[in-house]
Length: 262
Image 1: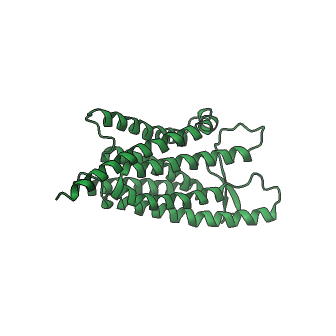
Image 2: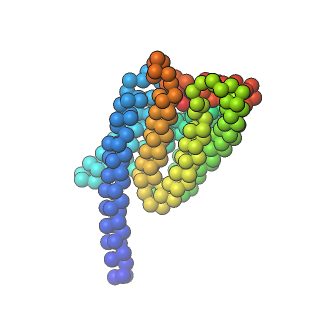
Image 3: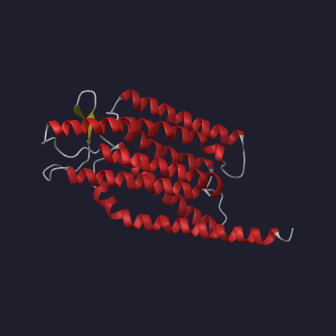
C-alpha cells in the first residue's frame, strides 16, 4: 500500500505538467497565427466557414481560460465535460463537412448526407456516454467520431485524387487554365488531419480529452489559414480577396466547379 503513494504523487505531478504544457502550446499557437487570422478572416465577408472558424478558434481558448480559473478556484462549470467536448467536436466536424462538400463539387446530396451523419454521430456519442456513465470520457465515447472521420476521409481522398487527375489533364490541354487548383492542398490537409485524429484518439481516451481536442482544434485552424493563404496568392491582385470560391476540377465533365466556403 505504501508503494502506491509515490506513484499517485508522481501522477499528480505529471498532470500538473500536462495542464500547463497544453495551455502554453495553445497560447503559442494563437500568437504565431493571429496575424494570418486578422489578414485572412477579419476583413472577409460573413460566411458559414468564417463563423465556424471563429467558434473553433475562440471556444477552445475560452474553455481553457475557464479551466485555469477553475484550477485556481472551485467552480461549478466543468470545461472538460461531455457537453463542451461535444460542442467542440460538432464545430470541427462541420468545418470538415464543408471542406468535403467543396472537394466533391458542392453536391447537395453529399452535404445533406454528411449533416445527417454528423447528428447521428453526436446522438450515438451521447448515447454511449450516458449508457456507460464514468468519471472520464473513455475510448468507447470516441468510436462514432472515428467512424465518421473515416467516412469523410475516404470521400475526400477518392474525390480529391479524381480531381487532381482531372486537373492535370486540363492543365495539359490548356496552359492558361488559371490559378492553380486548390484540390491538392485540400487532399493533403485531409490526410494530415485524419492522421492527427488517429494520434489524438489515445490521448482523448486515456490521457486527457482537453489536450486531444486542443490539438485537433489547432490543426483545423491551421488548415483553414493555409487554405485562405493559398487562395490569396492564387488570386489576381485586381480581385477582391473575399475567398468566395475555390477551383475544384470535375473529373466527369473535365470542367471546373466553384466551391465556396471551403
